[in-house]
Image: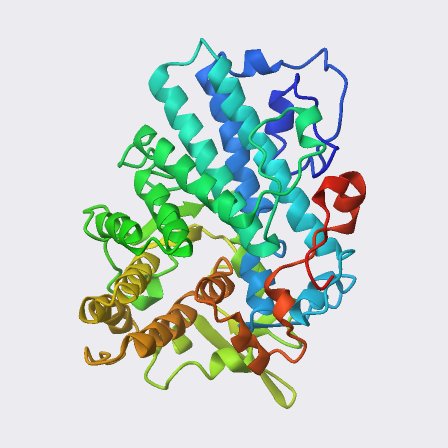
Length: 459
């Protein structure tokens, strides 16, 4: 992990409120004109500012960000949903699309570095709150719970992408500079325990009607993903049932409203950084002529839709250029004067498909089919028969998840990995090798911290 972190004795409001302009966390001297850590966390308003900065990082630079550094595009192209066209990226993103990345890949380094910067920010918030005497217990618990949730979400992606990773819960430089890797299964277990501990700290109701901050059900959805990854199907079922039956949530009646910010199906979404600007997803995938700037739908993805599936027409738009037709991802449509779209992170449809998976894995096929068919109904598709085998049902859930969530959060990659089916990518990705289930640890990180060795297999 990077030694370039802020000294553990200093945490400034400016550092936490940089909203992504501070791309590197560096070792600094005591800032005489700024607040110290203890001052930041003696006021609810300044502690809220630190948490808001962490949310801003999620929108701009995190693994769940909708732009070019997020997993929607990076893992979407890595795992066969998107074709890459980013010829201006010094080949870093294109190497990931072509599955020929190496330990010096700058995008791989950026994903790792951004993640650990945000983990540091979350840890600093938790530590500051634990030492605070000026913030009420309810506010302290809520802010802590939200920070630990965000940290857990980042770690979940880190271990899915890189495997064994350092699990840091401190801002202590002397500890962090030489941390060795924690086995991925242990990281997942830590995260599950962390989320179980913070869930009671959060309310069921949202603290903002636009759902731009998490609530307890958001924690439950991430916990469910971890339980499925750990093969604890019954624990996932229990949490998912609570989400699905909650009066907070309901499906949109109109498929075209799926990515509008006021939907009752939204568990958590991220507000654009500036008023009236497009979501990062709308900007990333938009093009109207010529070759796509970043990504377009792959032929493999297009072939996954039947003619009856209304999502293809609603969420994919053909763009003709010369003799070739590209399909742009058109889930987010508002490019200018945006007032009706935010970046959706979690939505109810995912809870339904995860529930179908959890039940199928427990051999409760008929129950699972009901949840799968609920998603198919939204797309205008006929029911899957309840007489289907468990194995075929799991294949259908995987296929339905792809059609529903392409370009979102790298869900295709995560689902293939959870199902042990990443080898399917051999069929559509010519350069795919089995060791590509993990990315390499950045070479620069190995140089800074030899305890991160050995490098991931194949690199």
